[in-house]
Image (tube, rainbow, N blue to C red; front, side):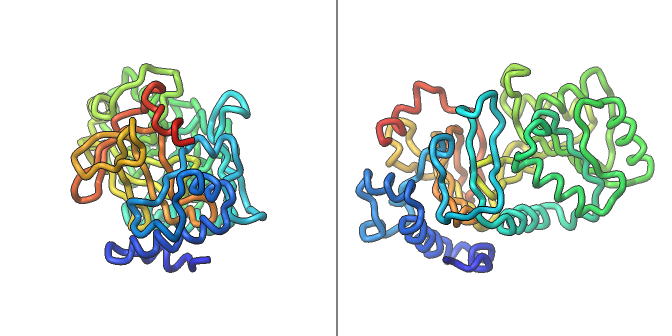
Length: 323
C-alpha cells in the first residue's frame, strides 16, 4: 500500500504516476472495483494513462461495501430517509481523512486557531455518522476557542453571537448548509465583519434549488459580505474542494476533476466543456479513488471547476449502460 506521505505530497509532475499506482492497488484489493473494471475489460495491463482508468459510478456506495481491507475505523453515511437510499463509506484509517481535511483547510485558510468556527448544519446533525459533521467538529476542537460551536435551528442566538464576536474583532468562519443560511439571514441586515461564510450546498427539498450564483448574491446582500465561500465534498470522498469567490472551486493537490460526456461515460472532455463530474481522490486509497459523481460541472484550463447542478435522471443512462 502507498505511504500516505506520498499521497499528500503529490504534485503536478507525479500525480499521474501515483494515480496509476493507486489504481493497481485498488484493482488488486477492492473486489467491487475489480469486478467493475473486469466488466469493462480495463486492467492494469491495458490501462497506461489515467484517462483510461475506470471511474466507479457513485451509486455503488449505496449497494456495495467499497473497501480494500476487511477492517475499518469508521463508516460515514450520507443523509437520506431510508437505509436503502444512503451511501456508506467504509473508512479503514480515519487518520487519513483527518490529515486530508486538515491539510486542505490549512492550505486554504490557515491554522484553525486563528478563527472562531461556527457550524450551522441542522440536517447533518441528525446524522451522527456524517463526514461533514466529523470534519467540522474536529475543526471546532482545533480552533481552541470556547466560542466555537454547533448551532441547529437557534438562529437568533447565533446572530447575537456573531455580532458580539464582530464587536470583539474576532475572525469567524460560519459553515452551513444552503437552506439554513437562507433561513438565518432572512429579513436580516447583518452587516457582518471579519466573517467568512462557507456554504456546503444542500437544499434537501426544503427550498427550491437555485444556482450558486443566485444563492451567493442573496447571501451577500443580506450579510454585507463581498464574497461567499463554498465547500464541495461528499460522503464517498475523503477530500474537499473550496471556492473562495464566484463559485470557482480549487482542489487540493491529491484530488483532480474530469468532465465526462453524460451519454458516453468513457469519453472525457478537455477543459471548457460541461458534463458529468468525475473525481480522482487519492485520499480514498483504501476504498475507491476513481468516482463518477451525479453532479454536472465544467472544468477550467487551470484545473479549477464549477458546479452546475445535479444530472437529470434521464441523463444517467450512460453509467447505467456501463453497469
